[in-house]
Length: 91
Image (cartoon, rainbow, N blue to C red; front, side):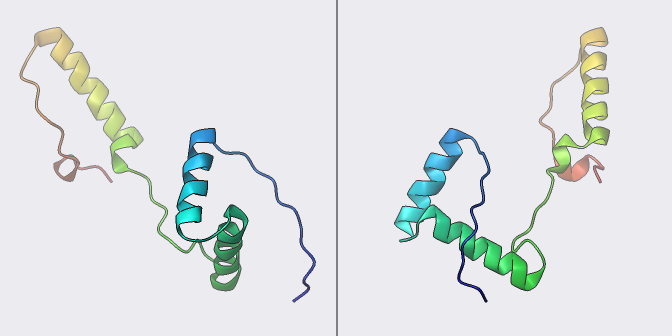
């Protein structure tokens, strides 16, 4: 593999960047080294090396269900219960 380097530039939230840098320092890494490790794993495995998932709470189906429940509560009142996503039928 060629040892030439290539610059990669991207932007992220400033607070996230600061927290990421602190975490890398505790691991004894620079942010560049941490991203190089990430890129190496992606290139080798041809996948993101961790699970990337969407929280089902924010699915269109669940948001519609919540809006309907809110409208019903505003119209006729009722008792407020905590939402248990496991029982909500969310895909």
